[in-house]
Image 1 (cartoon, rainbow, N blue to C red):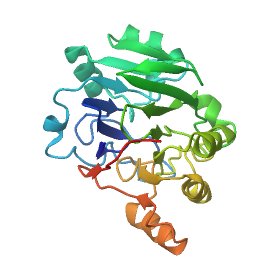
Image 2 (tube, rainbow, N blue to C red):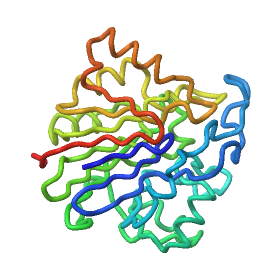
Image 3 (cartoon, rainbow, N blue to C red):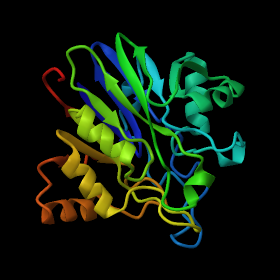
Image 4 (cartoon, rainbow, N blue to C red):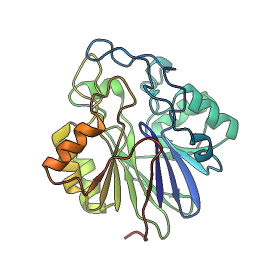
Length: 268
């Protein structure tokens, strides 16, 4: 299995002869408005351009996973850091089949996308010769997660490949702990940028929860959702220092944009 960190939460996963795009935000730098105006500098998003070889990464894709895309089916509340207009156009032009939370399927169809796999929580479905399971996610601490409307994470299992858990945008919940402890994914991707709007508590795991996530994970952890959005204050270097202080740096990888992580061997 190869996991390409593209930018923010966007990944390309190569496994079992398949290529899967995850949570595409494909627009140019500064193509989206700020997500916070008061707590953080109101810079336009994304803060950085896509890696120079992104076009090659997006060739010959088989499917796209979208962990969440909308809140209350309102266009102004679309989660553009996981599906922006450039990504919508890309998916439409290629008629790329999409796996998404069951509750997002109608919204995606409205904008011309092709949700072939509508994933109810906790139901394992057939997917590209393997299986896919949606895990409930809670997108924020306190009341703010109701405004965010929540999404899912995904557990992906393909033949003769490591098992992969992509947390999606979530805080650390009992459902997340359950996946890590009971299903024991070989690789777990965690959204680590601690995003926060001008109102409410953080939308993603705080440092203590990230550290617990890493401690509970039986295998390698990949931290992403970093250094691409104006409302995500955690830097790769800050996170790296904290992991070193807790002696977890050998277990948690923090790839740069455009970096490819190569994992050998089959899954459990």
